[in-house]
Amino acid sequence: MTGCDCPCISVAFAWIKPMSYQDLLHPWVIYRLNAHLKHHPIARFRQRNDAEAYLLVVKQMISQIEFAIVFDPPPPAIQIRSITEETAEHTSMID
Image (cartoon, rainbow, N blue to C red; front, top):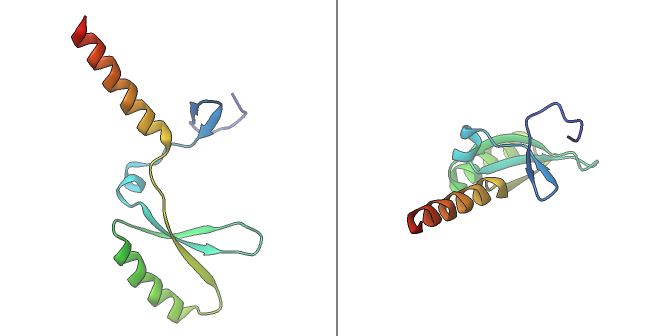
């Protein structure tokens, strides 16, 4: 292990924290940008236009801070797992 106290998934020597189900449903994230490259998530949304509308309100309230809207897709571990499960199903059907 890497000494990490959180549950992680190993994918080709990369350690990825699994996303919660709520995070999977809301892939559009508004981040508050800091000068020291520590970005803090402010809110998550299902649709980009909801995130843009929320960002307009936040920028009117706090104009001196920078924000960014980012699409945060599921980690590759979820996609790899689904591909290997499909492959296993196809090989079991052939046998």
